[in-house]
Length: 281
Image: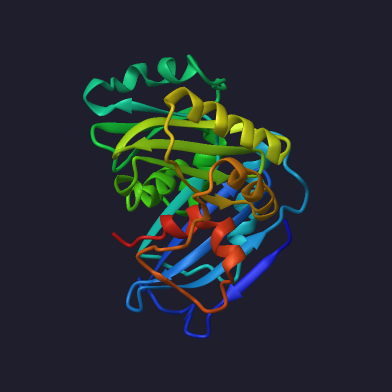
């Protein structure tokens, strides 16, 4: 990824408690957006590369810390801070059955959880469901040292929030978000969540395979597929998907905040989860 900077002329760095900050952390890059509470508008977006590609969670945590403390466009006292950690290590658990002390054991059944990982929880808009996810303690420590009240979440939290707006309108609604090395896949049937999972991929054909395989298991004939995420992979997979599923679309941004005119469509699609996480509630 290249460095990207989009800052609206209305952004006033010196305003106190006027902005909400959303941060996205992944091994492939660091990005953030800033939402103006009064205008209800995302007025700034930046994507930054690490000076050196981090190896391991300690290096990633330090790289993120250095970018934050040196970044000149971050608001001095944000009203709220949301932090997305991009990870395939998550699982959805019925809230009524969730025992926090057993959460690490549950997540470890299907994912590799490091001894230095912390287990965190993220609420969803899916009835009686809580996301359990792991995040390196080094990253939590660095973030909390700067933003003690920051809310941590995996990328699937805003992903599910976005899908909530459309999934009841279709007999089978599929949401796909392409991340740098894996993609998130959700399948809804008449408003009910059937599947939420992450799959690694090396090429667009891998994405097509996993989507087709999952859909075959549920045997739906009428399918709506909505894609967002990493631009090159997303654009390459759409023609292939349309050969089998004609109702495949680029997911348009329809968040609570308007976007600055400087934020182009390709950025909206690639960083959709970041923009959907921008909230001052």
